[in-house]
Image (cartoon, rainbow, N blue to C red; front, side, top):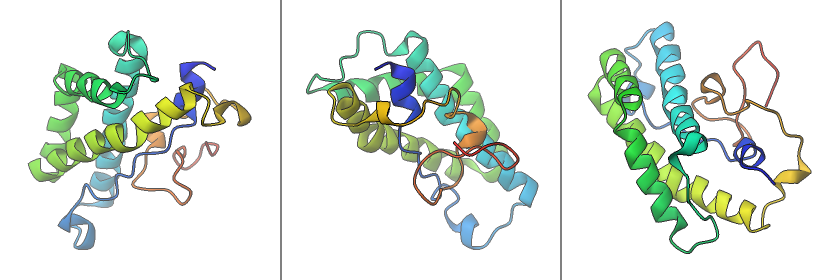
Length: 161
């Protein structure tokens, strides 16, 4: 089982809470909301890319401290120019509280969902091989503000992930 297959089957991050009060009383245009969604997806995708391009080198998903070490990798990613510029772009559109919430939600996703999922998948507890691998399903446009089944979905106009 390879890392791409495992990541492809990972649960989607639930970004529905990043807007806070803006979600119930939107002051952003539909275009701004869409841009925030795209940037939020890009932030999470950036971490996955960082992880797969060597940022996670030496991590052992079967180790008892895997979750803590994965969070350390996330913290290193969060300090990269790419991550900071993505959060800055979100702050420019929707305000710093939205960017801060995204960072907190992404950190919680890594520790509470992604790390346990990866640990189970690598130790055989998740049957990631039982589903068709769809390269690239964890793309920025795929991460939305929630999905019905908790899996990643491609943006409208593309095939479902």
